[in-house]
Length: 464
Image (cartoon, rainbow, N blue to C red; front, side, top):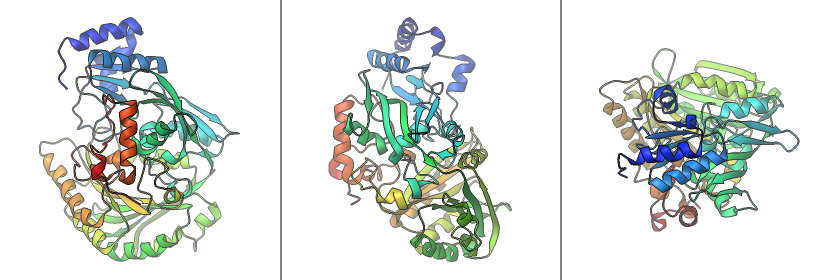
């Protein structure tokens, strides 16, 4: 979209007429802070950054963007690697001030502001021995994670983050505000659970909480040459894996700077079982000869926050995603060969374990369609700023292409960039037609452009 140079000025004047002037930011330190994302490679810069503190201010921003024909985006955690939090030359609604969390202990629910991060939610819930289903690190925005699906360490026991969404307040494209849940605006509620931020601005959510005072987490590393044997034996472990155990796997650079096979378990059941030398968690240390085997027992909130240092802001990132049915020998070989070809010591493969409660949700109950047990693979290229960035993206493309023959069609939309044209038509499977119909109803002009949506339902492939 091409925007006339005078249009942002007129939009600024209108916003300053409607709202306190300090909410409307076009430059200076606040602008720099509000446009700094996790991925330092993102070059998009909005003409206007609107720091929203209320639903009313979000409504004003949506209506002004529409009135002046400005591209619109929503910034929550700012962790989307593709930079969709920022609308280049447009208007970005910065929800980070809206980060309140209210815990209703008796109901087992949290009311979460649209700008809250996972750490905000977990810290508030932890005071009562409660947890929320989140992703693997705490700096991710809770709304963006939830709307796109939300794989995480508690998925086997409690499902995706999206499965724990109980209701949401949403500002629609026409500036109206609705509450949606299973009984109110049920089509919109269905679409929000996996369809991403394509339907409106979620200014607050109600999410389910669960009583898990402590978890057992750990990291087990094996040499890369053991990967075929370790992952083959892991398949036997996962075949009868209890819901309380979710095992993230992958390949990362180890303490000696060499790629290593990784197992990263989280046990959310009885801590006695989680720490038992003969139990399912410690069984992961007997799949080969370990180089590292570290475990700890503590709160889920603390374990999640501790991982944040592994993913600091400002590095350059590009991600590809595939959904693997299992750790087949062919898929493992692709991982090993990809690891040997890594162009940066910061890059990695991360495979998220999808099983248990998440896999028992019928595929048509939410927009998130792939409900078969699988491993969601992230091909993560990470590097520090340099001139020859293209080689890292080329590595990610090659590694993703090598996994493609062993993967389900589609992939995880929350991690999928716009260039994944071969995958996007298949992401929502048999849910595609319904999802696009809801999009046409609530946002026919395409005001909201979140994670990728297919262009035509006829090309979709069912995940049934």
